[in-house]
Length: 295
Image (cartoon, rainbow, N blue to C red):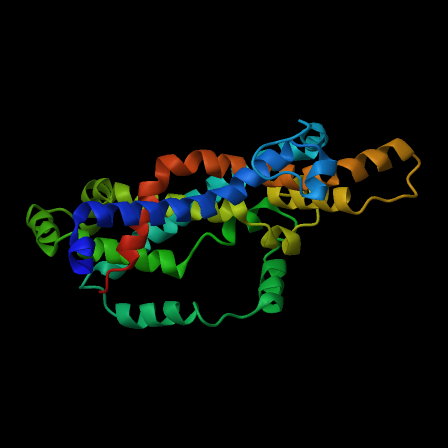
């Protein structure tokens, strides 16, 4: 009886759907809570009265955050770092992945070995800082574009894509027609690389958008701060109010909206990625599946 019950397709589908729905609720509720808490009365948020819907609609937190001109400068900086950093990453990763996928590349195993080693060992923060300083990149936007613009993991995914997608016969046919390797790459390989280019662009763009540590270490000029670092400063300001300030009203206001500032900061920083994700979800999944292939 039990075996027959479990072998029933409708029962199995129902169980799977219920299980997936529960996972969906546990995954989405934190995001939903942050959203409703950012619009709710700060006192109710602090007392834990906000559970399923907002109470005492209040937009003081967003008003405090968005009126700060640093927010808009941070958005601009982050968009620039993300765009140019992703572009540089694609210019490095796509050709390198294709080159390492070619069977006629001499020494590719040694090259891959040294690259994989860097995934487990690196020079450390201090040597990296000294190198960046010696190159004159401290307090420049270039350091935030260059650092993080290459990932060995992404290179392996790109290489695997080319190995599993582009047959050797295609290259041989192009060579018979007199096509050189650079021309073959530009005319044949790149047009067939749209899926992996989209995946890599997505991975690198999300990484650059969320990055704040490099700016924290290598940038002192506040005008060059990315959005994440500016929001961090606003969050710290909202949580640690200086009671010696000459304006007592500002002190009381910041104390009152400290909780909503915290949730508002999360919304402001995550909104572009949350809006973009439903349209590019399939590329995330495809990227994971490509990386799971063993070559």
